[in-house]
Length: 495
Image (cartoon, rainbow, N blue to C red; front, side, top):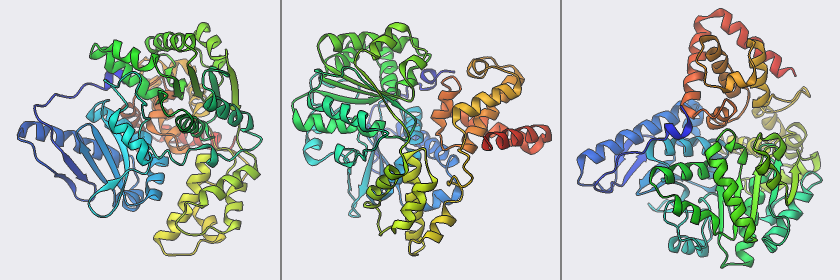
């Protein structure tokens, strides 16, 4: 089953039902509608959503991070309400992909996920857009399916005020990408069109895209700007086909002054949407409108048609590589400014020296240390950091395996090719190998279920959850499989 097939449209109800979900005590209704059937159907769908979310969170993390979170569905906005900005940053770093995927699956692709801070007065405030931007969003809301073609359209409401050029820590690994992004934001469509930024996960590509968006709006407030992840672009595309609203979709994307498209590797093996990307690219380029694209690899490694690859290289290709130790320390120092208590310099240096390949892991390590100290009312010390980060730190010099390596090694071990694992065959031995790869990806990396599914041919997160569950069950009852998975894990971690 493809992702588009799994995201079936939900039922249409005759009345709007506003409901609130309290994770600690289950569901409770807010303003109740008059349609009892609709109310019950909504409750069932949200109940499944929260149950599935809880399945993917360890009991300790659930008690620590979700006990004070409220989830509310208000019309077409699903609100994640946390007690502080710091709390929201942690939730977004660890569970944003999962939550947004679950909302799309259970509530529909049109439902927007919004992260808000609870002001303890019964209301909630958005830590993202500034007041002026919020007013623009109310006047010209973004997203499908009826945005005016030249509204000053807003990106998804994420914690984006942090992602500006002033907060981007420059180093040898990202200086060219930063300079190009600044140039594009000042004169969109005049140079480096398209700008194609590529590099591994967690190195700052999304930060640069948001920084371009912020700076362009600041310099040219009347310009039409749209940021979208490739996954959301795909979901909008599928929705528009289903609703027979492709004219609206084309207008929305082919008339903007600046289009920022994040993580285009998601379009692999999606021929129909790639055709639409091709024509959107041509329409924007012919009008001298700016495009900025991000990816985890260069165009030649995407497997797209030659005509698309060549167009992506018409402007400027620039990569972001893992930061050196000085840059990592500067990033930690910048992030420590957001921590609730002061973080000693020796703790920051310890983290910077041992986490080498991913900015998100740096931030996650810092968050874990500060959160543990705060929750247990302990001072932040080097000893505390060493104890809390044992599972994250690279103390042996061996780097952790990537998802791509796990899938490739699993395929070889079982006697298959990478294409076999990514394909649709349901042969028993091949399914076992595919499920084992899912299990190992989840066990050895911090990849979300959605990203694991992408590595295995674009499977959705429910398929990945099923594969992981099946492997766990079989490991307990099948000693041969248990030995094989253990051997695979050992070999991958000793690379």
